[in-house]
Length: 333
Image (cartoon, rainbow, N blue to C red):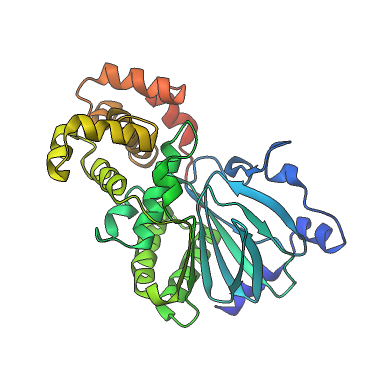
């Protein structure tokens, strides 16, 4: 990594200065009182889908989860973690991806253990998922499990539980990954114009390169429910005109039987999954494009804009126009 970036990251933050002097982690910085879920709204700017933050050194961080996807990249040194009860060491050049459901404990890092955390909202992966090959691979399963977890409103789904809870790539000797990580860190720290497009394209390219590192990958979590992964793949690709009958025909299932299996395993029915995917895409289009609300409704599969308004407000508590105003933040140079 470039020395100027390392020097920038090595500077102690005010929080780290207190921790180095013997203070304990102030949990209120990260999560509400009495909670153990780190809240992205306390750490990232409103409206941003991806944020970079230094990995805090000098203190033990007790068991917690995140309501976002966290990606840790070690620039120098190493850190020790307990992930779902399993101890894991992340060394210089390694990249660790954590789902929302995995529990994490972090041991104190030293002054020369320099890492960065990427805080990523699930919506960030909407378009990136399409870049990942359809054949079975850990990255695709991880992303689908992440998106399923973001949609669930009544606890973990079977698909989320079966998907990998973390991925650890030992990528120190793989130059393309190192270069892309450096580019991401530099771009997010300096916030160039049109950075959202650059960030998503760069991260998508990064994942494509990481697919080549299956021999250098440590996977945490269970196996995969292949049938439900196929259901989510179909919904992700066909949400505009998805049909349970068409899906059942493709999978060689009776529609009624498939519907019952989806409800049992996912906790929602097929229509709910499609609507959640449409609304997720609508939120993305409202905050990332100048498309009119009418155009957004049509683009995600709703011909009746009044119905789109009604279900959008029921899901978010806001009209589409108000959501756009409150969520869209101007890019800063």
